[in-house]
Length: 191
Picture 1: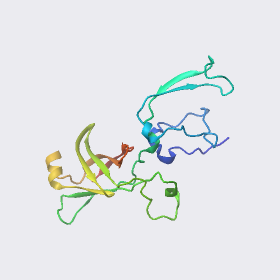
Picture 2: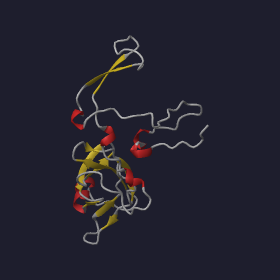
Picture 3: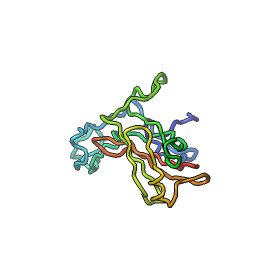
């Protein structure tokens, strides 16, 4: 019986929740699992499936009906990682630069030899939400793995530039030009 199960692989860490209790059932995902034959043009359209034993006719009472609209969840960008402590720019001591590391759905992204993972999207683009509790104070955009949160923006949002002892809650999304925002990285930065 395995004692060390890997969780949160290939961008699924957002769905992990709490660890499963001892004795919980698990599903083995192996080569017997196959993807549904859904074209990208079919995303968002309603589908009706009949699910049951392959040895019986689709009209058999053992089959169940299932309606769903495929969302393309498996195609959106992974959440960025390693958001760094913001550092102040030399240009204006109140400006903050926030940096992170992108992730990629490309299978070669798991190779240890690479300095940087390949971009699996047509364009590199990010949204960074500045949060006040559940409320979004501001959304910054970037085409690189960093964004500038200017002193003037901080003053508008908080009354003054952020300083020592304060925190900043953010969400970072990598964008897909076809499917929009990927899974967010939620981070609280400490100054």
